[in-house]
Image (cartoon, rainbow, N blue to C red; front, top):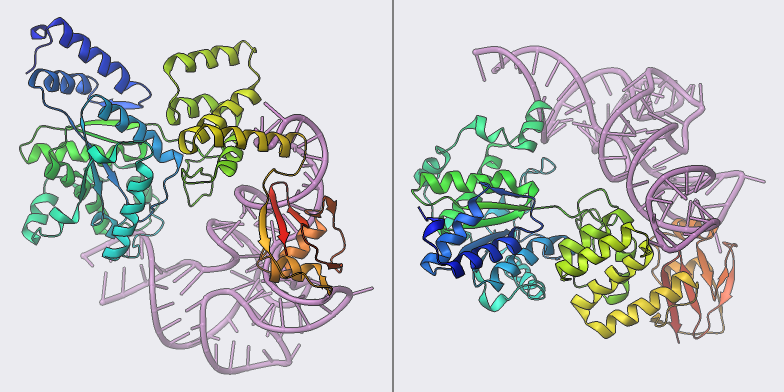
Length: 415
RNA sequence: GGAGGGAUAGCGAAGAGGCUAAACGCGGCGGACUGUAAAUCCGCUCCCUUUGGGUUCGAAGGUUCGAAACCUUCUCCCUCCA
């Protein structure tokens, strides 16, 4: 194949530089030397690599956990490689088997389109969408005949399928595995055939599916893609992977204030990981932060402020970041009211209103009276900075009245 | 095709005729502490202006003074054998 020795000096440097950047922060590359070989081939033949990322069209809200892989794609783009985004509109009909719900609701074409649009808008904040290739996998999966599907299925075995972690667990636990769930990895793998991908990226939880791509490509007589997995980012709880359904995420579309606040709530031991995986700070600055943290010259709180600030800056710009920081400091360190309160228009009247009615019916802060009542009894409601402790309280609503729920939810009444 | 096991609050899981609005764990939400957190401790976690009332334990009927628990039918899930 490509011989390292036949490269010119500048080509070698080019390979080394790309390799250094592209392999940074990855969890695993399979095979070990695969990336370097692809790079050598790319540089000698002056052909950009085709780097694939598959997307699930059912969950269009992008959070910073997704951006781990986007940042990696961005780096590939930086070196002139081609990013292939695959909208799994067809695979979406199955849903990646999680064991939780084997069947998921089928999306209509319109929903898929709408979700994809949302994706692209948000992805554009990290990668260059102008240069990205976008495909829907129904394009090549839908026309397959049953005979084609059998041929595809015959390329692998049940034993091989059961190597997949969650299949194996479910099988051993005596839980059901529907046959069609086996097709998910096969379909994703076939995407790589259709797109002749050189590299496929994914989270570590995707390893099996990504490897299946290599296997199936080979059986179709293609070069095997290199699999690069990226670490899964733990969410705000610091334990489970960031996901929307767990509610432990920071959405990249979120407003500066909550983005800042959420970033501040991650456990200390994840700060460096966040800096590494989801910010754009340089390797140099990262090292500085690491050493300052370990020798104690940087307070973890300040490091986290920097992290939160950086995230907001990346998605909203510097001035918003500064503002979010000031807001955070005043609200949480000085226990002052936030600079800008969410204002809620409400009819002001002379009549007194029952506090629970106000919270539930007028302000929709709670779904049920019981919830509001409990919150009051727990001491979680403040009006104009004053704790409410009487569930029977009747109050007169006034303009500019500030209602606080818990520590971080504020509302201002606008008459 | 045959045999068996199961369905309980957001999840997991006790309960096997009245003491059960249903133990316990997780999760969630509040409060205290702090550096926002985490850890820890405390409280709440079906609905209702609540020392009371209403509606719950896959669904529908039934037995009983009384059922989440017993019976019947149905729906769904799982396992094993063929």
